[in-house]
Image (cartoon, rainbow, N blue to C red; front, side):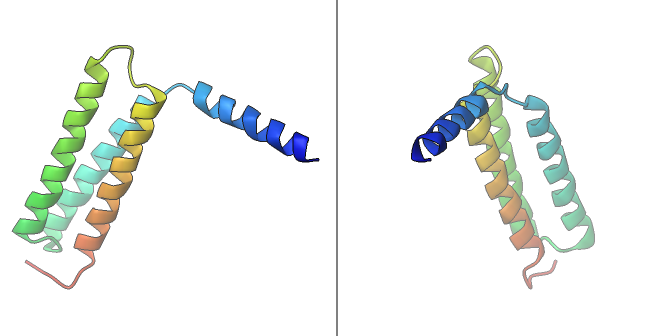
Length: 104
C-alpha cells in the first residue's frame, strides 16, 4: 500500500513537471489585474498612493516576465510557477487595498 502511494506521488510529480508553461494564462491574469486596478481608481476605492504602489508591483511582475521570456525557449516550469506566485500575491494586495476603509 505504501509503495503504491509513493509510486503514485512520483508519477503525479513527473506529470506536473512535464506540463508546458501556459504563458497565455499569465497574460490573461495580468490583464484582469490591470482592469481591477483601473476599476478601483474609477470607483474611488483606491487612493493615489495605493494605486501607485499596486501599479509599481504590477510593473515589476511584467519586467520579470519579459526577462524570463528573453532567456529563450519560453517560460520554464519554475519561471511559470514563480510568476503565478507573484500574481497571487499581487491579487491579494489589490483585494486588500480595494476593501480597506480608505477612500479617495
